[in-house]
Image (cartoon, rainbow, N blue to C red; front, side, top):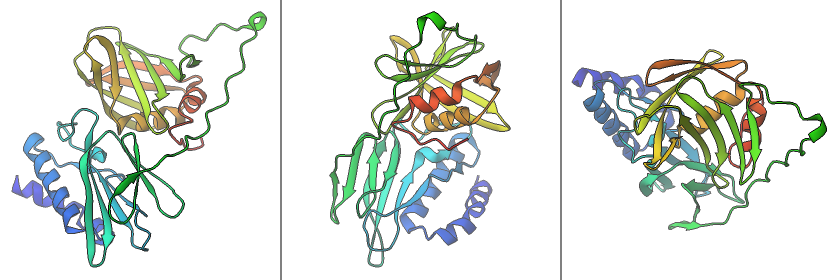
Length: 289
C-alpha cells in the first residue's frame, strides 16, 4: 500500500509543481489517494476539473476551486460523495498564500464570468466573494432555445425506429430509445445551471447502476442512481450528466451500451445531437461538432 501511495503521489508531482497548489490542496489530494487505495487497492485519477482556477477576488492572483466529483476511484466510485453531492473546497488568494472560504458537499459546481470577478455556482446557488464572505447573486438564465415549429398534420412523417426526439411539454426534453435492459435515456435542464440525464430500465435494477458508453473511439463510464424508491427513474451524478451529454451530442451512428459491465448492444444516435443540444441549451454549453 505504501508503495502504491508513493507511485500515485509521484505520478502527479510534476504537474502539481507547476500548478502552485497550496498545502491545503496537496493535503486533500493525499487524503483522497489514501482513501481510494484503502477502499479499492487502486490509485485514483484526477480529471481536469478537480482543480480549477478562478477570478473570485480580483487581485491578479488566481483563486482555486477543488471539486472531488472530478476524481475517479476505480472500484469505489462515489465512495467520497453523498449521492449526487460531492465535496467542494474554495480557496481565495490572500497575501502570502490562500485562505479556504468554503468546504461542503455540493451537487455540481460551475464558474460564470461576472462584471469584475467570477461567480461560483454551488449546486443551485450563485455566489460572489465580497472580500470577506460569499453573498448570493441573481443570474439571468441563458435564453431558451426557440420552440420547434409545430408539425404539419397532413405531412406528418412517422418517427424512424430508434431515432431521438425532442418533446416540449413541461420542459424541453431529448429522448432516445434504449437497447437491451435500458428502455430510454432522457436529457433536460433542471434550472439554468443543471443538466440532467435520466435512465429508465425494462427490468428491475439495483439502486446504483454503472453505465458505460462507447462511441467514436471514446469510452465513458458513469454511475446512475435511483432517485426515488417509488419511481423507476435513475439519474447520472453531477459529473457524469454533462460528460454523457457531450459524448452523445458529439457522436454519430451508434453508441455501444453496457450496464454493470454487461453489454446491451448498440443504441442509435439518429437525431441525438440536435435533440440534446436543444434540450440542454439553457444549462450546458456543448462544443460545436
